[in-house]
Length: 115
Image (cartoon, rainbow, N blue to C red; front, side, top):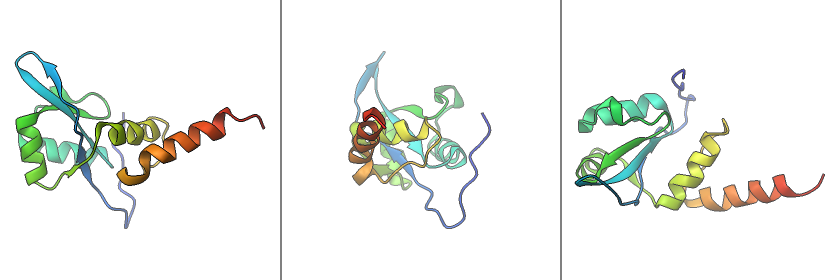
């Protein structure tokens, strides 16, 4: 997968969601970003190994989540993260977290309507 190139003037942000999934002795959440480069840079900053990269997001422990927030990551809900990734996985720009769920539902409604 080729790295995303930032759009000039576009905000580059990393997000951490509110999911809390048990994995062995840890509790995990997701870390996503507007660009792959920014996402990897944040992972490096907070000490997350590349093996946790899942192709479009990182699975990180809550202790790393706190470090990411301290380093500037934006906290979002797991629903917002899912909606944002819905757009990303379709090659579309991720909407802002505040509008992501509604935008996804509207896009799904339009797609299901007959032409």
